[in-house]
Amino acid sequence: MTRLLSLSAPLLLLATPAFAQDAAPPLPEAAAAMIDAAIANGDADDVQAVFNAARAAFPESAAQIDARWQTYQAAQAQRAAAAAAAQQEAIRQAGLFENWSGEGQIGGFQSSGNTDEIGVSTALSLNRDGINWQHRLRFAADYRRQDGTTTREQLLAQYEPRYQIDEDLFAFGLAQFERDNRQGYAERYVVSGGLGYRVLNSDGLHLSIKAGPAYRVTDFTDGRRNQNLAALFGVDFDWQISDTIKLTQDANSTVETGGEALVVIDSANTSITATTGLEATIIGNLRARASWAVEYDSNPGVGAETTDTLTRFTLIYGF
Image (cartoon, rainbow, N blue to C red; front, side, top):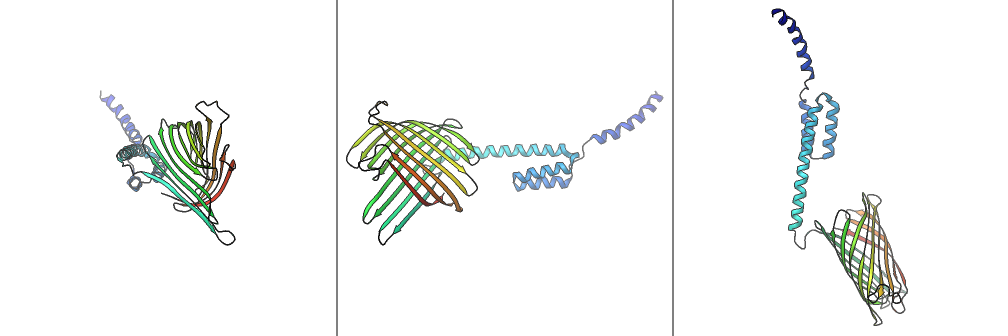
C-alpha cells in the first residue's frame, strides 16, 4: 500500500499543472471595460468591431468573449422586439390625422412683352402607412394663361387605399378625378380596384405593378358624355442612383370599351400617362426635379390632339 501511494504521488503532481493549463484565464479587466463602454455607447457597428478586436487581442479568453457577445445579441433582439411592438401599438392608437408623410412641389413661370403669359404647376402627395393598410392621396394642378386666355387647366385628385396581403402582393382601390381642357374633357372620373405585386424591392431599386377592372365616366367640353367599363394597368419604378440622385418612372394606362361588354371595340378609348423624372437633393429635404410627361388619349375631345407632352422643372419638399 505504501509502495502504491509513493508511485501515484508523482502522477498527481504531473496532472495538476496540465489541468490548470487547460482552464481558460479570466477576461482581462481592460478588455471587459472596453466591451462595456462600446455597448453603453449604443452603436452596433462599434460594438461588433470591439468584440472582434477583443477576440484577436485575447484569443485565450475567446469563450468568455463569445458568451458576452451572445448576451449582447439576445438583449438587442429583446429591445428590437419591444420597439416593434411599441411601434405597432402606436400605429393602432394613432388618430386620423397622425402618421402622415409626403411631399409638395411647385414650379412656375411668367413672361411679358410681346406675350403676356403666366404658368403655375403644383402637386401634393400624402402617404399614411399602417400595419397592413396604406393610404395614398395625390393632388396636382397645372394652370397657364396667355394674353387673357386660359390655355391650360389640368387638375387631378386621386385616392388609393392598399392592403398588403403578404410581403410583395397587395390589393388596391382607386378613386380619381381629372380635368384637362387641352385634351377636351371637363371632368373625368375613374373607379378601380385590383391586385398589385412588388417585383423589385432592393437597396435603392423599387418596381411594382398593378392591374384591375375599372369604370370611367367622361364629360367632354363639347357636351358629350361617355360611361364605360375599363381595364387599368399601372407601373411604379424608383431608382436611387446615388445619395443625391433619383430616377422615377410612373405609368398608368386605362383601356376602356363602350358598353358593359369588354369586346365592344368600335367605341374603344385608350388613355396613357407616363412621367419620367430625375430628382437631385439640394439640401436636407429640399430637392429639384426635372420631368417629362406624355399623355395619350386615343379618342380626345373635338379639336384636341391625341398626344400631349409636358416638360417641367419644380422644387420638391419632403416631410
